[in-house]
Length: 201
Ligand SMILES: Nc1ncnc2c1ncn2[C@@H]1O[C@H](COP(=O)(O)OP(=O)(O)OP(=O)(O)O)[C@@H](O)[C@H]1O
Ligand SMILES: [Mg+2]
Image (cartoon, rainbow, N blue to C red):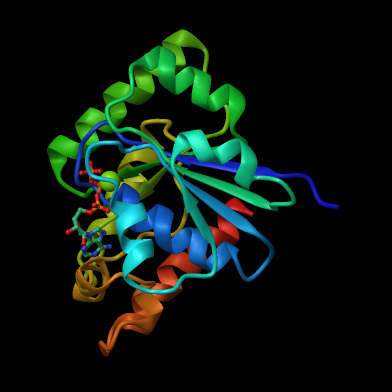
């Protein structure tokens, strides 16, 4: 049996699209094998709530349920608490195969991600950590430019830029995966998620 691959998603800022990415990423990875998605956000429990609104091809559990659920799974995806302390991030980087940090395209978001990265570098815990640009305008190169600016500053970033589409917000309202939403951009939105999955697998 293949080894369990552990992927954590966390971020310095709130509302950057962590839960949206975690949920849909779990949905794409489920095409490859059993996926367990852990909801660590005790306050809002976004992914747990979305999974209760519509059927999804993976199991969502709270941290307490993770150990039991993970048996026989190929992927463990964790929607981690936001604003981790550097020590927490280092621990994530040591326990997980991949740690994804979603980051928006604004100057402030890029600056705060860069700061977080520098703290990580100083603490020697950068392995496994990658930034993924999210909520990028679908038109133009703003997302790619944000990614390239971070890369120039030495921050490893996924090639894939997750674009901003209303389909993601519709999915959040209805529950279920973005590919199943009735929206003429649902396919584009899903293709970004597939791009992320392809890069982390
Ligand atoms: N790619 C996207 N395109 C459009 N809207 C998006 C996208 N990703 C997330 N959103 C929207 O942005 C809002 C915040 O997303 P989400 O809840 O995934 O962020 P989060 O980082 O998990 O937030 P929190 O810090 O509160 O946990 C939601 O309304 C969601 O629908
Ligand atoms: Mg969230």
